[in-house]
Length: 173
Image 1 (spheres, rainbow, N blue to C red):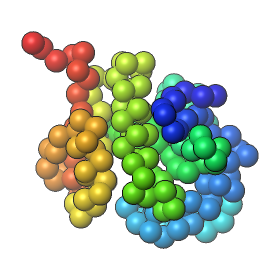
Image 2 (image 1 turned 60 degrees about the vertical axis):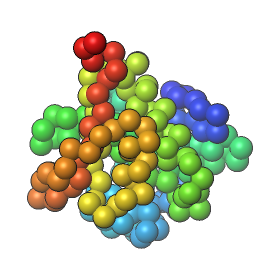
Image 3 (image 1 turned 30 degrees about the vertical axis):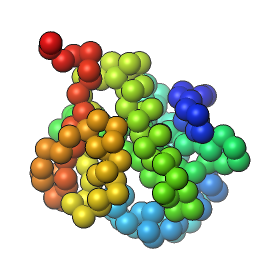
C-alpha cells in the first residue's frame, strides 16, 4: 500500500516480507543509538514484532511508522511515520534510516513528505518530534522541514529535545 511518493522515495505500509530488510537496518547499533530502548535488534523476531505492531497500529489509527523504499534500488532503507505518545496523546513523527544512506538527504525528504501528509491528509493540527539533546543531525532535519525547538522535556523518564510543527492551515493570519 503506497502512501507517499517523493522524487527518490516511496513510503508504504510494512509487510511481513520486510522482516529481513528491517532486521538488517536495526541490528546496527549506530542506527539504534537514538531510537527507543537504544538496543539493536538481536534477531528476526525483533523485526517481526515491530512489523506486527505497525500493521495493527495502522489498522487501528489510520497511520503508523511506514517503510521507506528507495525507488532506484527498490530496497527498504528505513522507517518514517507517526505514532501517538501514550503518556500525552501527542502525535509524534519518528524516523530511522540505514547507515549506508546517511548524508544523502533521505531523512529530510521522507520526514518532510510525511509531515505534509500528516497535515494535508490526516489533518493533524500539530506534530511533535523528540530527539536526544546531542543528536544534532536529527535536529537539523527537523528544523529544515519546519519544526521549531521547544526545549528539553521529560518523556517516559527520558529527557528529550522537543520539536513542534503546526499545520499551516490552522494558523491565524
